[in-house]
Length: 127
Image 1 (cartoon, rainbow, N blue to C red):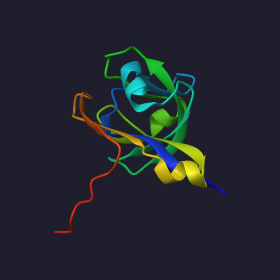
Image 2 (cartoon, rainbow, N blue to C red):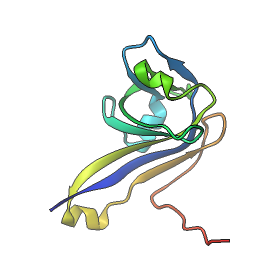
Image 3 (cartoon, rainbow, N blue to C red):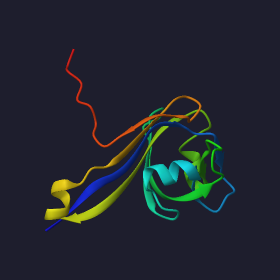
Image 4 (cartoon, rainbow, N blue to C red):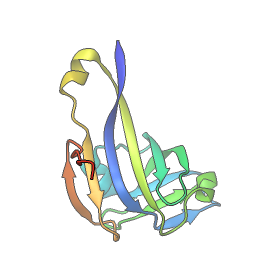
């Protein structure tokens, strides 16, 4: 049996550009791609916190250290500069691989600076 698992999550990144006329994809700061393990041209899911839009595209590498999250092509209609997004990549694992799998989670401030990274999501108590 194969299971689709979360590979990487970029949490609360801020969209810096949206370029409708661009061919497509989402340009992400190359150092963030490296930290998260997301490969250039890898399929990603983007979840827009501001408007609820959810869409699929692929990652391309932007300049390292730039803090860029540019949503391009038709997806530019789904995310505007200043919007907060969650970017996820998934992987397919067999049952044995899934038992020990830990995703790479990266959390950002409003300037797309890395606040922290982790391999598990903290559970918050209901208040």
